[in-house]
Amino acid sequence: MSEVSGADFRDEDWYADDLADARYVECTFTDVDLSEATTSGALFDRCTFRSCRFNASAHASSAFVACDFERVNFFDAAFEGCKLNGSVFAECTLRPIKIVGGQWHGVTIRGTNLTRLDLSGVDLREADLSMSDLTQSVLCNARLDSANLRETELGGADLRGASLAGVDLAAARLRRTRLDLPGAVLLAELHGADVDTSR
Image 1: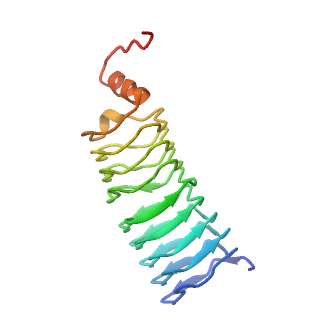
Image 2: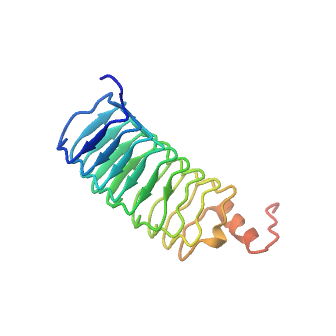
Image 3: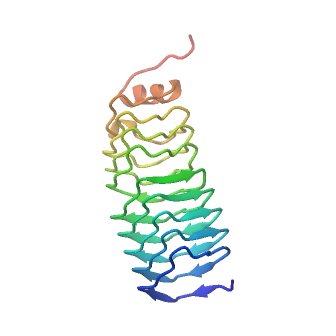
């Protein structure tokens, strides 16, 4: 498919469309139904999605780079090995959603319900997850370096194996949060402890 640049799509029905290898640059999608659509190796670069539906859509090795998602419904959508670096999600429905690996480096997902999601191994470096609810979510082996977790609810979340360099865990809301030894040491140090791990 040839590249589409600067187009404006409104009130279109792309239900169950196969968008494999699609390439859209700086396009705007408003009230477009992408339910059950599929992408594979597709690229959406600096696109804006407003009030669109991605319900039960499936995306593999696709890129949504520096995109804006406003009031978009991702109910039961699946992203496998996808790149969403620098994208911003505002007033979106993001659960239930399936995310397998991929790069979500620098995404902004503030004040959003992300409870019980499995984000194992996802690259969330420098992501802004402030004020979001990640209660009982799984973040094992996720890359959270320099992520913003200010007032993020992490009750019952599993952070074992997650990289947390530059993260202010003390600014998050921890309650029965599962941490491995490095995470526990980081948290203790943030609270002023001098941790001796030599023994």
